[in-house]
Picture 1: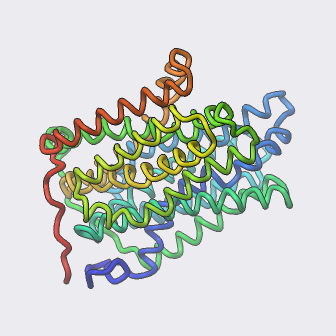
Picture 2: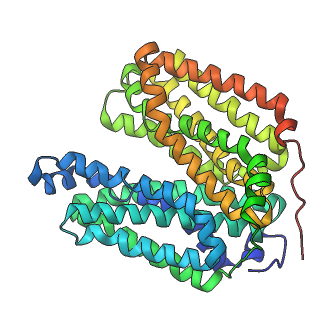
Length: 403
């Protein structure tokens, strides 16, 4: 994959670009493909009387693999290269992800889910690292934004398809999405992704220089991710208090997060080009501040819909921004490790979400929690606006290189 022109397809090739987009989208499929089938899974594994818990763990236990894979992925890429990492990860995703089709032992099935999570983390880091190597300047932010949009879109499609398959054929058939998706991405990667080996820095140099340079962004990862997951955790409990009581209505409102995240992600590159690094991040914080305050202060269904749209827009800007800013700031020889750490700290933020917001809800109530979080994010956004130079946000983005 060599630079051939100033266009996304020209620089990566169509097969390579699709492989990178699909590889980055694997997480959306992994956590959506069989969630509509969870009640059927619970019934199937209810011999011990814990079917519901086991079915839910089939979703959540993959997070352990994700966290471990995020920490390990940079080292794996340094050892074997991005191309081999993507190929092996997609093979593991396809094979282990298909376990639900035939595995009878629930504990072995749960183990395969951990492997799937590890594979997702590795392929995500490898794809973003390859994007950061192949593309420069605004093309890089466009590609990262597009990959985020693909992930949101495929997650929604996978969710709907999983419901159709489970309803008409059974819960096991929902897992057919894993081998289909995994082998498709594998074939495209074989055709279009060439290896990208960076010169590996000494570990001490990476820790003392890159680590100190990037720690503010890792702290932002935790904060941004913890708030992002309010859209899938706390919002579901807030909506009934706003008059959105039917399960179908709740799912429709929450789906607006994914819809907006999908749409806006494709424009992330243009947003960052126009607003710059500081402007893009502050805009994301302004949008989430508006959304959280609206959800907390106005308890009517219309406000819930608009608030959910704001959460989706924030997700579409903030998450690609994290990967892009770290890809810019990290030295080339340590970029894979740095990008892998983004994923690790994002999952740390997701893990901390209930430990932060459940006590807040008990103390302030759900609406008070949204208001307090909105105020905090607004103040943090103002701080970033004035402290952007201190953490390197005012540094211009690299210009687009055409060869």
